[in-house]
Amino acid sequence: MGSIKRGNLIEVEVDEIYIDKLLNTPILFLKECAGDRILPVWIGTSEAMSISLAKHHQILERPITHDLMKTLIKILDADIQNVIIQEVKNGTFYARIHITRGNSIYEIDARPSDSIAIALRFNAKIYVEENVMETGGSFILDKGLQKNLEKLTPETFGKFKL
Image 1: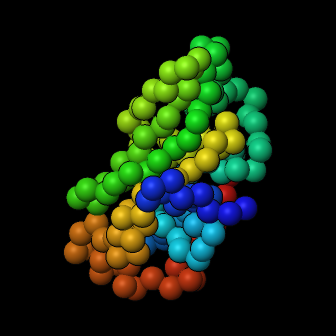
Image 2: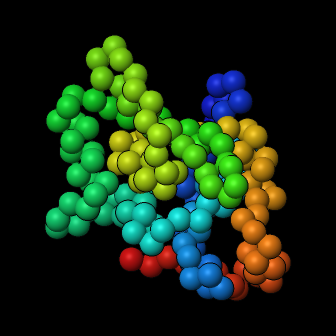
């Protein structure tokens, strides 16, 4: 599966979700499809569960929020074109979901974790702006987090379990 670059967009896929044991927070790793770069994105626990369920094609007995959103989008005869993680400001990632309905395309502001959880349910492409991918390698939220990150080793992370 090759990387699709439209302008400065890099196609990525969900690699894994790990738990940062120091911060007790899930980290979503997005891997460049045609490269070795990985973008870490700290996300919430419920979003991590939702992404993990979608990635492993597991369906719960009752729909969770992202399943409900999928049903609503389909009922409205719309589809997810793609998701773009477009920028990072002050330690916060920003994404857009591109929804198509008929000949119209709607661009919706959303958190990357929600965007990805929905994209996986539609088998939609996930892109990251090149400047975000470049920034992600040196992404630091604050000095306290920077000190914690400097202590991290591969053993620090635990794989996210459902």
